[in-house]
Image (cartoon, helix red, strand yellow):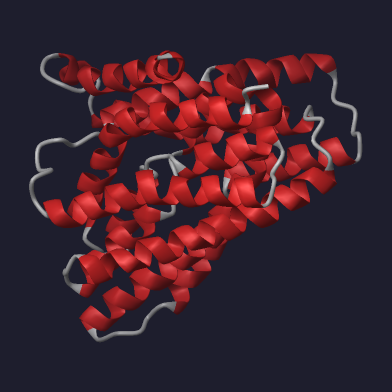
Length: 318
């Protein structure tokens, strides 16, 4: 019950975002509004939250190194599980490649909202470190798989420009820049003026609610019956199988409690909204990715309370 109450506010905000885009309200909050809101969150509000949390963290490099080794290894197992979905449900190569990266990418807005409430700034710092390392790795895997499938379908191999663009996107990602900058400030004890820190924290405090509203506005629940077997398999893989693997690795490698909590939250998240944008830009099967993203988000309303309860009782009980 406590786990449901813990994350209920986040999903109520997502629901509000969905409702704001429907009917007459949708006339006031159209596509242009939500596109602008997403850009403000991604480029202006969210980076300060990451920077201040990591910069103020008391996390040691030794703790971070052990955590990252276990967590990144766990997410590589998630890649393997997502690849196995194609062995279970038949579909064409481009469709499988489009759904493939949904199985190991994550919705950062939901994750940060939950981990902040569940494990405070220290747990948030673990989560941010994992995000900074996993985003470039997962993006590279996703682009490689989808570009190959599309190239085979089109009998073309024009991937050089795509890879250059992807590398640029990764290294100019404001979330990665903010996390790395915060880490450098932390490690080298760089003094930050108090006024500036308060300013950045104020911006960051506005990010999570707005990000969750944008998730709700992006839900597309009309066509979930299409491709149901593949959508269902992807959902079970992402929200059940991957967290089970994370639970096992966190226990086996004896991660400290806050690190274990961060890993399990990370592993239990629905896929990222950006999966749709990337798939559409690369001429993959974007409609099915929109359906998978929606299915993951809706199903996570049931599965996330369970995993939060596991975290509270197994890792944070003391």
